[in-house]
Image (cartoon, rainbow, N blue to C red; front, side):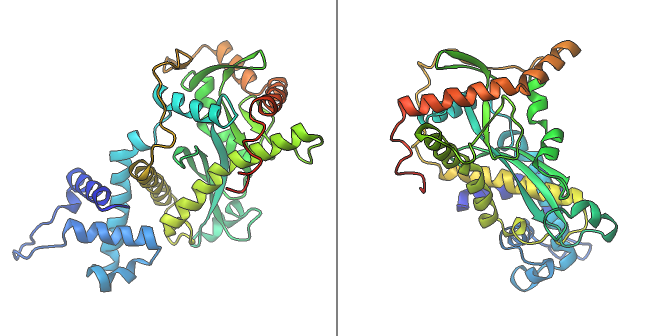
Length: 348
């Protein structure tokens, strides 16, 4: 990250937690500075080094480095979480819809997938629960990302024995929409009206109205073109995972800590700082003028609906007929309006 972003985080953490304020002991000797503690935490996060490996560079003990890491990630989540791990508001949703419209997918809010983080020090008694298709214990992160690699949703903590469908059943993505807290999107494709946004997903996800999946072994030019377009756009979340792991080696290498709650705070802090870097280094490629977009996006934060309405919302989300109709409309929409958009950019 750039220097001013690092300084912003360091100053905010020092102001938030008195642990990072430099103090004198009973003998009047100055203790470790905020810069030393934050740099030690950053080295463990960015380079994935062990706590005792920071001693030569920062002159800080192993136990102090670990305590600095725990307090640092907790402070980052508490200070910046409401801004950089927020749900898309009305302006954010309008921007996501505008980007999706330009890419040939009106109503698209991003792409969704799961990532496994290997847990090296998983307790032996828990390994049967945390070992799945991978041979080592893992913890799962479910995320939704947009084209600019901003991660709009992060759900971390499910054991590695689960698959993407099991994680989805516990994820708040659909629950928020059913409870009236998600973005209510109204758009039309081929004369058919839709009232829910959708995410691009891979084949394991269920055929719900909120997911658009590719077509395995497509037959015909229209379906082949749609499969290329969907798979090209769905790479957004895969790219976000790759960039997150490249920036913060701690989530790329096996986790050494024993505490699952601390691992969750580390993952959330990495997502927050990743979004801060995306915001700081973003370009103007996807900036749009929203003045003439109309009132097509509303975000509801009302109280939880009545039970009947809640059940009906879930039925609408899981409606397979809407999923099939939406996919068919998108196939025709891409073929008629964006015939050359993905012919030469599938590998970009």
